[in-house]
Each structure stands twice: as C-alpha cells, then as structure tokens.
Image 1 (cartoon, one colour):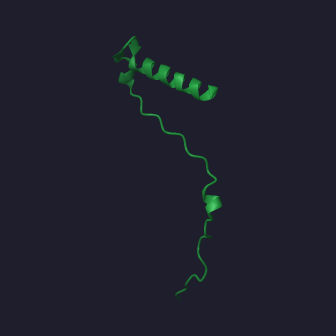
Image 2: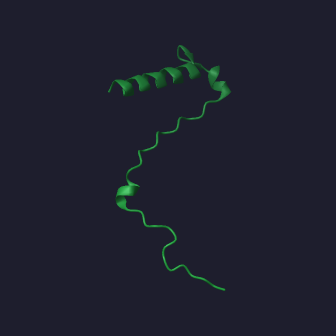
Image 3: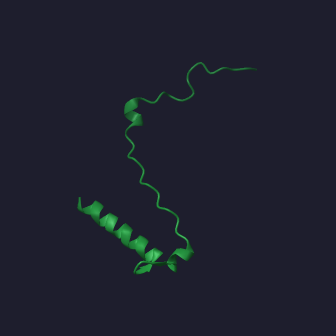
Length: 63
C-alpha cells in the first residue's frame, strides 16, 4: 500500500524564474478615526499625512 514519489513533487526553480518578480510596494501605516481630529501643525494629523503622501507621489512621478 505504500507508494513513494521517485521524482520531485515540485519542479526546481531556476534563478532566472525566481528573480523576475518586481519588488512589492511598502504598505502604508494604518489610519485611525482619531487621526482625523488630532491637531497637528496647521491642520489635523490626517491632513498632514495626506499632504506628505501627495508630495511623495509628486516627487516619484516627476523623477
């Protein structure tokens, strides 16, 4: 009743196949409801985060 696999169950991965995937984007930090009302500089913490992310996206698109 016992059977053994004589060939590898999964085919081996070559280096070329393993290195073709692009690097994943970094995940953004979580945003909580309280962030929308927490005073921060000239607005709220949520507004400051939005401005920072917008500036980063414009810098990345222009390069």
